[in-house]
Image (cartoon, rainbow, N blue to C red):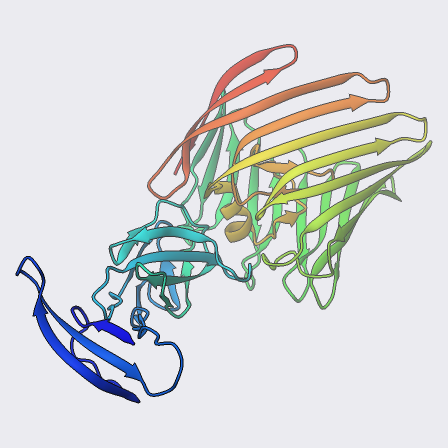
Length: 434
């Protein structure tokens, strides 16, 4: 025989049960009326209590950021509809957020929220697509998930860098009326004049006031293909090869022309985790560069191993082996913030180069020099740790740290830089004006 207490759940509809006795009584304190229904199951066997099923919260919709929104702030506020619980139980919410292409499950962003909105304190990456969802739960753990929604974070606002000062040296940037960078000049009176192709608006040539001129040519796909440097008594050039259909940079040949004789100087070979484009930010990254430098006594071999932190290079290990038996190793470790490196926007927006490029410009410490070519970081470097060791075991190390002040557009305006090494330490500042 089963006894069901009908205090909370209201009227009961009982199927296949035979009602034997219905009795209303008051408890011994005379306070709470209770309705008891004595029930007998129609089948034989031991009587069992009725189980009343708890339902999960009702379905609900995501509100902000809107689906497929393409200009979401870097620190968005997420909001969604209230999820109604049929039993009137309190509902809490968990928010999940992941970058497009990283796959499920999404990382947990916030949990146990009672409100239907959440202001994120995490700075998201510029110009990246994210996916998010919310899971509503009642106290028993019954849950309902929203659909998955996508949005893209705003692109970096382009600003015109006017001045970069490092300690006592200033560098100035001048632009044309249509917004192209046309001149770089430093406080030592060294300057570059830049010219762009009419059709593609990519950097076509640069002339150095006291030394040389560079010319840049591109493939029909718009990739940097050849670079020539011309100076008195000497010319040199770089030829870049790409692996199609992926578009990966695979080789750079460096040749020198002296007194009418062309000489192969260096060959750089790029090795990837897979044969995919380095432009694809979700693709496997470059993992090694092999450089052979031709000298009169033989070839100097340099192997560069590359490790990544997101879209930026996190660690470089260089091993050098020369024909005379000299061995040298170098390790560089980098840390970054998530704000905009102004030189990256110049390389991408002004010059039309990719992250890996050949140029005459060493724009700042954010540029990593691999020898005949450069790589430009998307974000600002906050720390560089350098360790060198030669074949005799002599070891040298130093560390640079950057403490930035930023504009409201996330560009650096000031950096306090500390250099600490085995033998000395010093401090200086960098400034950027826009």
